[in-house]
Image (cartoon, rainbow, N blue to C red; front, side, top):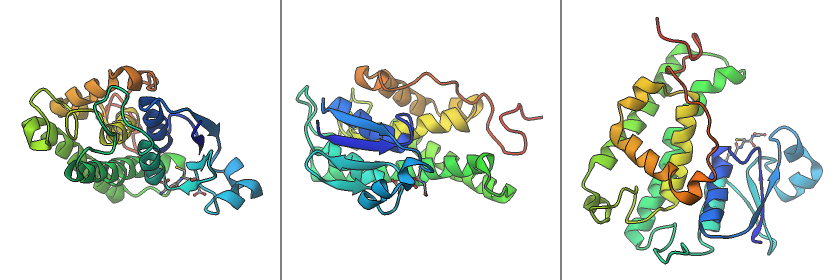
Length: 237
Ligand SMILES: N[C@@H](CCC(=O)N[C@@H](CS)C(=O)NCC(=O)O)C(=O)O
């Protein structure tokens, strides 16, 4: 048992990626459901994690860690893939830097734009120009991923048969980007948008079908039409 992960739900993408990392490395980790407005505001929780946010990690050895990228990276550093293929963090300095790049991209370009598009659902003031700006940002990120997956794989330090973001095997880059692409498909990006990115979709399906990742993906319905606050997920007129 490496420790406890506190998070709002096992499916929340910033929590999910660490649970998947633990599963891929065959590390035992305890998930503790912790609401962002409830348990995380208790004195006991705040004594450990003064920001009173989730996710947070409490190691069996006493390590207290917040910031979900740091948590995912730490857990990924605790072992290598059991099939002998290597590390989830990249096996050379170049690959490690690229894994880090995609990890950051997954939050800054995918998570942040997606959650900004849906923010008004949860009470944030609506601004049509801000929504358009975040849609533009999300489309740019999906276009970038699609373009990356069209390149010969040798350009990402892999052999020809590989279809991973970095190198020849699954890394934290794939796990984290997948989690946030999945959230974008579930919450905002309709079929027409998804169909515009066939190379990204091929990569998505490959990660979705990874035997260990598949166990951790709940079948959820995807957005049929692009989400806009004014019309919800309705068919554009
Ligand atoms: N940079 C942090 C952000 C964590 C964060 O903002 N968590 C939200 C839930 S997704 C939260 O706990 N909000 C409650 C609050 O701000 O009080 C990370 O990536 O872990």
